[in-house]
Image (cartoon, rainbow, N blue to C red; front, side, top):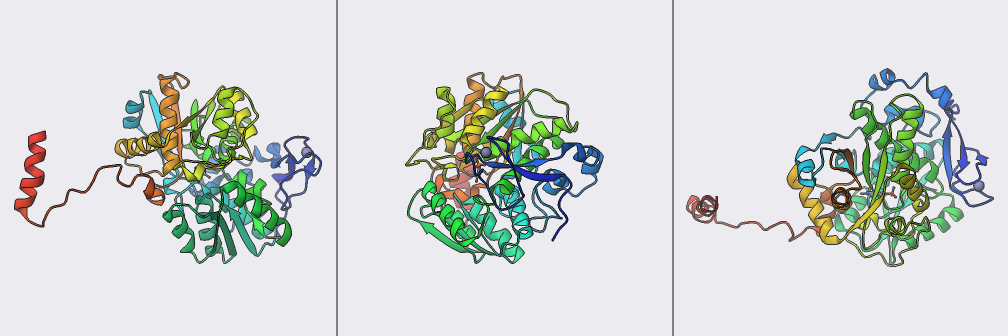
Amino acid sequence: MDKPSPFFSNLKCRECGRLYPKQAIHVCDFDFGPLEAVYDYDAIRPVLTRAAIESRPHTMWRYRELLPIDGEPTVGTQVGFTPLVKADRLARALGIRELYVKNDTVNYPTLSFKDRVVSVALSRARELGFKVVACASTGNLANSVAANAASAGLKSYVLIPADLEQGKVLGSLVYGTNVIGIHGAYDQVNRLCSEIAGKYGWGFVNVNLRPYYAEGSKSMGYEICEQLGWRIPQHTVIPMASGSLLTKIHKAYGEFARLGLVENSPFAVYGAQATGCAPIAHAMKRGTDIVKPVPNPKTIAKSLAIGTPADGYYAIHAMKQTGGSAEDVTDDEVVAGIRLLAECEGIFAETAGGVTVSCAKKLIDAGKIPRDGSAVLCITGHGLKTQEAIAGKCGELRLIKPSLREFEEHVYAKDTAAA
Ligand SMILES: *Cc1c(COP(=O)(O)O)cnc(C)c1O
Ligand SMILES: [Zn+2]
């Protein structure tokens, strides 16, 4: 048993504020409010200085006092500290003064931001003594649980909708995990997982371990601040599935300001969804915090296709409170966003990245993000995993025989004539 962390004290209900012990529980017994990790910031402040952080390895664990485990991390110790790319060509294309891309397409080991949440959840699962770990997933979480559980020697089960992209399915199977395809949408997968978690005592990273899982997303926000030279960005555009990542980037910026690691400057967070499953963005546009479920999501952005988003209500409040807003885009716009990011910055994102880029374009065009401002786009997963979405939509091979004459006739002559 590890000594309890001196910094991470309890879980706390987000509704009534009741405190709970740091166990594998995720809802309040009294009002079913979600439980969230709480910290002793006065104890953290003198320890977690800029100098201390900068002296540590380039991983998400350089902020470990703000992550909810007791001992040292044991799973996913290399995760995080992905590049923050100054995206000048994309800035010009979108018509904004300054733009950065937080590039989690190259997160280690499974090429999506989910490695952050899984690193925390599985490190905590081990501290709590779980032998079997599991998840309900739209794809990336399954990949990350499978890979990180394999390297930790934990048995794992990942449950996914049966109709996911091949890259996501093979990207779980290869690790020798148990992949269970469910005939149904994500919400049905998630409901089944709640029943299994209650009955068999497995560690479901996004069910009974959700308070720990969710905190891992904060590391993306911390890294953005540090990589910008210790400041909070004015505008951050974030893709939303359950809405958790958005709420945690909001929390991360607030914590860094509270700890004096960055100036307490104004900032806004913006949520991005695909029109075929946009329960949070649509509620935000209607001006309400009542999120209407989407029973049959229809979009190529399958990683974001959660019809009943657990953190939708809190995501809306984070956007409202900061003066941000939400947008949604069609599948054609998703493809256009993927191509624009690739052609401008050489970054190949999955469908969620296309959602984020095209929503940012709409927000800038509408004046919600000002053209003279500075923005960060959170690009959360790699395009090699969702190739179906762009197949046949970014040109074709030009086929020739292996001869110089063919090259000159069919390629060089044509291209120089066109130029
Ligand atoms: C899971 C996921 C998200 C966001 O998930 P939340 O549930 O809102 O935290 C964003 N992008 C990708 C690629 C994802 O896999
Ligand atoms: Zn409560």
